[in-house]
Length: 159
Image 1 (cartoon, one colour):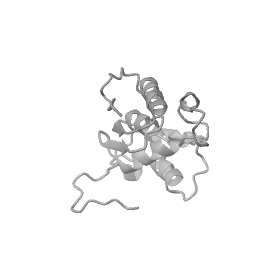
Image 2: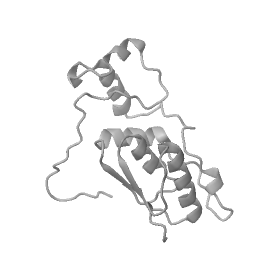
Image 3: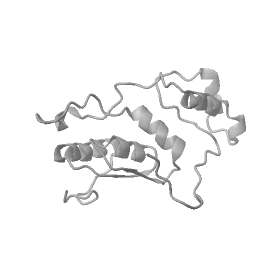
Image 4: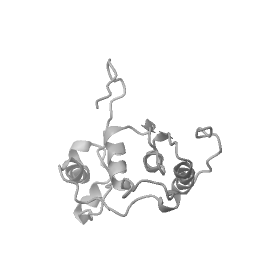
């Protein structure tokens, strides 16, 4: 499915200084750390290294266990949900395809992984979840991830 709004995008995703934070399990080569904060992306060798990790057609550096707590949200009648999406995948998608301050929307919030990823990476997150136990776990996860008090009503509480 492709969702595309007609018209011109006036808010292009921009990485003027490149990527400075790597999301994954590889160790950044020490010699590249001196480039962190380089003003011009073309000269930022750290950014180039990070981009090569992200642009690869095979992400073999994703931490499989880097997920939010979810087991307490499961109920007996649930279908088998093998594993929530890893935060590394979410983080990469958010930093590659959105700007700081943008809104990230997830219509199937589950335990809140995408919303937490948005908040962690300087975006705003909106999520919808019909299942009460997942919704409640998402609220707990957001409190933990953002260290910000989440007031009742920030999410739509009348599901």
